[in-house]
Length: 557
Image 1 (cartoon, rainbow, N blue to C red):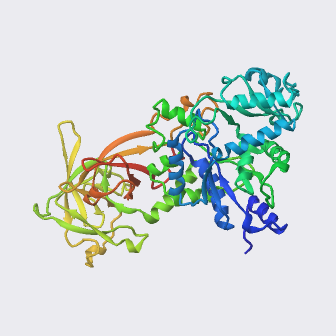
Image 2: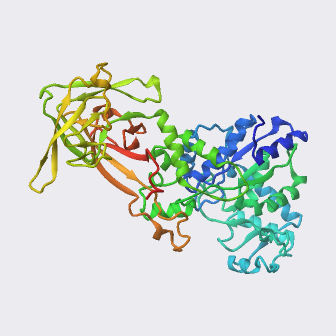
Image 3: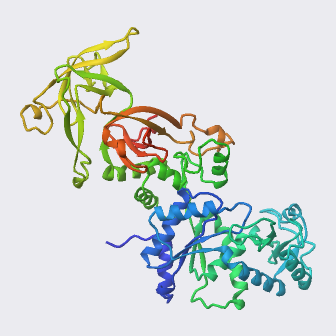
């Protein structure tokens, strides 16, 4: 069968067919350290690092740190941690700031060649002269400023002799170009703020479009892959590369080429780092790693695995067309992976006392149960069984119809991995609420005992926890943060679409094997869903976050 390839792989294959040496291939992932990475970045990570693995090509992790107003070391560390967690390896960690000296020198070259000039207008005046998509722009009154004068001011800007907003350096291209990005774009602006790496060495900083392609060139990146919104930038990317050809000290077999793929748009989710930061700042969520956030750290804390995220990205595929992906696909991938790796545990969240009246009062029995039926090597665990148990309150009614297969007076069910029981009586309080169920058990019906009674079939199986041995736990249920597929699209304000029921806490009782579960450990709570031990857990209080349910219930709701 012929291997199916995406369009980026076809581009690389064509370059190789045309004589481009495979050993020269190099890619990069260039996040700006102004926030935490989210699931949309995971797609870009998977594409770049996945291609690196496929073609045995190095991939640089390059931080686009050209704006000291928004960037912090905290974000650099978080990004490194996220990519490591996704199990990708980079060749080098680089920074756009590594190239500040080179970028500055090349900018001086463009000024000397008459291809760049200092504009002393305000940002508002420059914006007005840009024109519109249907009307051409107009030239700046400083467009024909002599190169010597522009060069003098540019050096003064570098030497802190001018205040913020007083001057910018612009490329001299074409104010009538249909692509507005080529209407004399700004290359440098003055920012008197300390940089997270270079400190106060610089007070002028390159714009993204100037720094990006030239950093690609400096690092000998051959294929510069980015999301579709950067497609209009490609012509400017190429203009800068082309107009500095004569100044290059390195000879690449192929100048870097920018190519674009559709970004990941996920329903019920916001992918804007600016808005995500607003959610954090306004305390709508507890932080960047809140389990409702689409950040990689949030998904990790929610209990998602790297394998689930990679499987999701693979199913989404690489295309040139934008579309909205249903979040249930991501949840399916999590459920599919966790089913294979998560050990099963019994947890009762809404407890109802159950007493087996013919079971000895002082007897404690160790019931053996499979850790994971999907994984033979997971083995068995022992769970203490006693006369006094907890079951889920919704698993019992006094009277029920034929389609109710759980516990009711006069009918039998099996307790998971243990015995068949029959309910005989419901104990009620003064309000008429059921507080306890009295049952009898068939002592020959123990699961796996080999007796004829143990083979007897009953229609219902319930999970349970021993009252004496169960440990109290806190369960945090998380749902989608927004109520609409595209938050803010209809209301005009994403805050109006916040789901007020996206976070709830409940208390329950768990089998004692969970007492020593470490943060990050993942389990299937039988008949409930998949859960992970939260980082806020302690010896005194075990905290579990719900990852996903056993079935997709959102669409039904």
